[in-house]
Structures are given as C-alpha cells and as structure tokens.
Length: 401
Image (cartoon, rainbow, N blue to C red; front, side, top):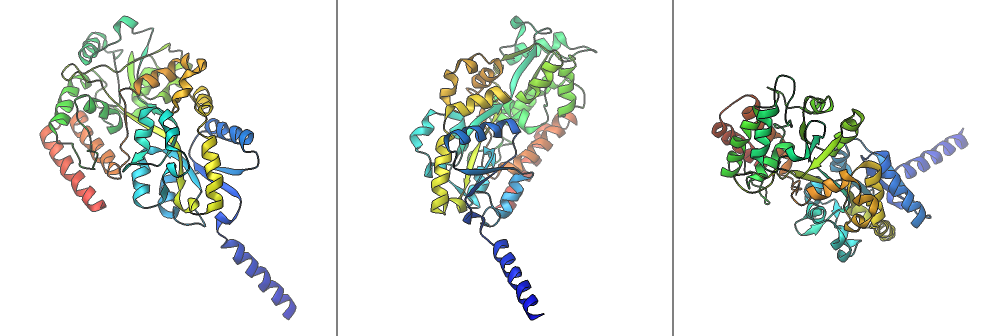
C-alpha cells in the first residue's frame, strides 16, 4: 500500500510540475488570430518554405482582445504573438503587454510600407505592428444602374443623383449612415473628427455639427428609419440601390448576385473641397512583451517577422481574400495592378484615415453611434444631442482613466 501511495504521489507531482510549466519553456511559437483560413495559410506556406525547422502554432481565438487583457502578462497563458487590427494597440501598449516591432525589424524596412499602415501601427512614436494588409470603405456602384458618366465626383452631384433616381422601387444611394465607423468619413470631409489625437472628444465641434447637418439631406433619400448592415447591403445585393458606400467584404456576395461592380473615389464635399474620408483598418502581427523577454524566443520571433516582410505575403493575401497589401512593393506585381478591387482600396488609401488606436476610442464608438441614431433616425435636435454626447464621452473617458 505504501508503495502504491508513493507512486501516486510521484505522478501527482509530475502532473503539477508540467501543469505549471511556463509555456515559453517549449519550442513552439504560438500565434493567436481571428482571421479566415486563407490568410493564415499564406503565412504557414511561407514559413514552411523559409523556416522549415521553426514550430509555429496558429490558433484561432474568439474574443481575442478581451482574453489578451486578462492573460497578456501571464507566461503560462499568453501567446507569443497575435494577428489583429491596429486599433487596440494603444490599449495594449498602455497596459504594458506589447513590444515595439522595431525590436525585431529594422525601421528602414518599414519605409517600404503604405503610409497609412505604419501610421496606424504607431502609438506614442513607437511602431507596434508589422502590417500585412488594410481595408477601408469604398464607393461602389452597379454598372447596370449607374453609368460611368453618372458616378458623382462631388457630394452635390451625389445628392442630385439621389433626387433623380430614388423612387418607391429603388434608391440612388445607400449607406449605414447612423454607425460611427461609416459616418466618420463625412465628418472627416468637413475637417472634423470624433476624437483628437490626444484623446479629447470632438463631437460638439463646429466641423462635426456642420457635417451632421449637411448629411441629413442625403438621409432623406435613404430608407426611412433603417440603416443597419443587413438592410443596407441587401438593398444593394437585390439591385434596389444603385450605389453604396461599404466595405470590400460585400464584394463577393454582390458579384454572386450578378452585380457588375464599379469602384470610384469618394465624392468631394463641395463646401470644404475635402473628400469623404472613411476609416481604414490595418491588419498585422504584434509581439507580446513577455515573449520578447526570453532571448531564445526573441531570436526565433525575429526570424519569423523578417520572413513576414516579404511583399509576396501581401500579394497572396490580396489574391486570396481581396485585401490591399500593406507592402508598397506588392503594387509592382501585375496580378495586383490588374485587380480592380485591390487597386480601388489602394487609391482609397490616399484619402482614408487609420482608425484611432488610442484607448479612448473604445468609448467613442458607442457614444458617437448613439448620437447618430438620435439625430438621423429619431430626428432629435443636433445642438442638444451633440452636447449630451460630448458630455457623456468626456465623463466616460475620465472614468476609464
């Protein structure tokens, strides 16, 4: 009996030791992500070719950002790296879980990337992401309903087109006008912003209020009381709307529905001379600080990231998924330059603005969207609503701090 008990205790001790083992003691590099399989396959293929001896495990993770908040400094639970959009960089930098990407990549290499991708990856003068690709909203139209000559170059041309082509059966133009991500482009077109670079809400600025007031006349010619994703996109899919501002993620469905898609630069606001300038999201890879503190792992991560600077990665992702490569040299490839969707996004990058990556923006997505609903869908007074939204934003940001 004593021998049996000793054996059991020995196995329990081994179990506890292995259960508490620091995951960074093994030789597998772990990467969390929330991406489609075609994107990850590109990375796996190039690593298999360039670093065949490196063991890397790509793990799809739901609620990735929430989980990183909890375990980002825990060597037993955190990944080595993660792939996600750039907009959480400020939050993760502030809570101390990120390493600047320039600890692994020479900054000169990053000069070969599209400007907005490095801008979005930068927080407080440090670059925290190696970008793979970016996405932004596009002006798209059904070529069977809107001719190339009819494509509006200015906001007033767009408005006139809506007046002339909206009736009981069809809309000239639709968009998700009461969602902050979509409406921000109009505010930028008036020189405004939802948030300053140092985290001060700007909902009650003269520019924001002018944009909101001007935008109302366009909303009059869109579906009454509705602006949600499914309704707006379905109208376009079913050829009940001639044009739309939407993301590249609707392209596949639109084409499956037999729509001959056209792409155009965003209309310029007549009053300001500035284009509608939507947000852009930059997708890339980030390194956890706790992984970089291990010299052996840091060396392997450095090798991996340097492989990931290959422009071919962006080319393959673009051809597989219709995204825009972050690396400028990708646009020298003929298959990229002949891809209408990818080049439309590359052109859009000239006007697009990276989503703010500062922590305060988490507050603004909610307060700004609520403000838009009150004004655009409920018809409430602009001055009253923006004042309340500004105060709520300030209070919540102060509470967050």
